Length: 212
Image 1 (cartoon, helix red, strand yellow):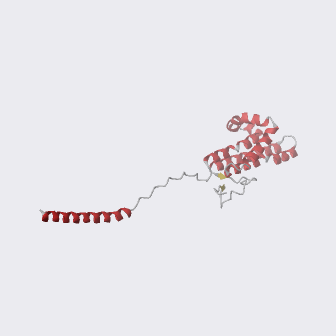
Image 2 (spheres, rainbow, N blue to C red):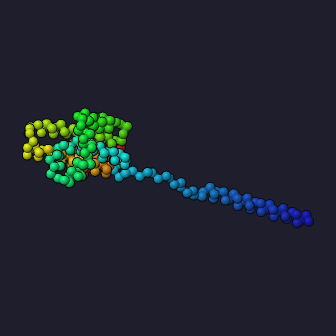
Image 3 (cartoon, rainbow, N blue to C red):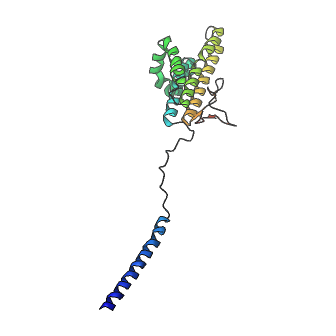
């Protein structure tokens, strides 16, 4: 019995040592086990042009006051073209009547676009640039009216000049609004991009730089 108990103890001790060796050999393997990388949350995708969608939309809306301002210059074209009356004059008629009912509304729109939008640093740089550009476009009326004074009473030349002024406004409004929806500040003829934060590329309209 003593011999069997002594052998049992030796067997028990040897098993205990083997178990300890196995446990000590597993710990390093557990520590060195490669950990899976924690996936990072995906960043929100920015628009292709770098400007937020809201800034693009509001920028395009800023070209509405210049279009309403230019409607009287195109009266001769509206009388001759029914398509222009249906597409431009009729939808804008309530705004045209309200805008041209008071001379102060004209200057107020220029002040709002330039002072409260173009110079407001709390707004996005893209929105400020479009606001300055739209206000500058509205100021074209002053040299345009000065030129029309030389022709006196309405006539063929006066009608041609008025139609040219109207088409210039329409071109700038369409080109500027489409550029704004694409996240770009269009280089309008006679006006430019409106701010040094937007640099001209090799071709096409100026594009918005997020760090500008």
